[in-house]
Image 1: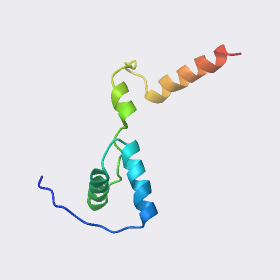
Image 2: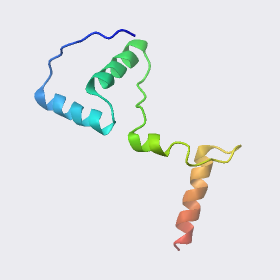
Image 3: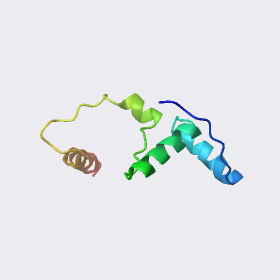
Image 4: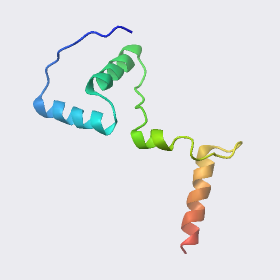
Amino acid sequence: MRMTKLTLSADRELVGEAKKLALAEGTSLSSMFARFLGARLSGRRSEASPGPLTRKATGIVKLPTGRSDQAVLEEALTARYRRGR
């Protein structure tokens, strides 16, 4: 895809907060803005890309097959908090 340079103006504080958000998400402000526009123009909600910690942890845990993520989470939380009693 060919990229085109774009100059925008916005409130200084808004730009500062947007830069912090982009840094926290491990992306650039340009990339974040492009994803936002793409999602808006396609009519679907924007799904945030996983952060650096999530990307690093991907694939570490293998969930059992045949059970929903919610069921596995409920079981783990029940086991965790029953142990402490």
